[in-house]
Image 1 (cartoon, one colour):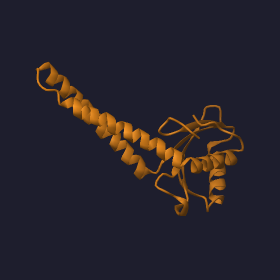
Image 2 (cartoon, one colour):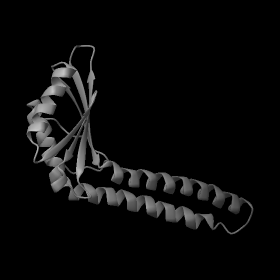
Image 3 (cartoon, one colour):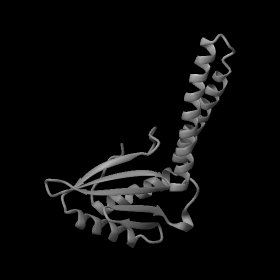
Length: 166
């Protein structure tokens, strides 16, 4: 389950209709109630670690279920942190990226104007912040690796065959 991706994912094709595939997944994960919580929406299933076992770094699995033209079902699975944790990382990357870009432009303008380019200090700081966010995401993946494995094993059991994570 080790991955350098921030949000590991997989894609799978199932030789059944989307409704049958959805029902199969919901039946399996609902039957695993002490381990998992399921939140289902049309074309989408969210599988979470049960509340009593959930930690800050616990992953969740989002399954998008789409029909194909061949009459089969394509499933896109994405592992990631809970929405609140994902928001911290998303906004952290957004803020560090924007501030880093603007400070880089400012530093270039300062350099062109033969002024002290102090904007480079801010740019360096934002690079460090982005690197720390990435390392934090990797640490969270390592801490939640066993639960990610449980989620993936559950998915493979529900579908009835192995699926490789990218």
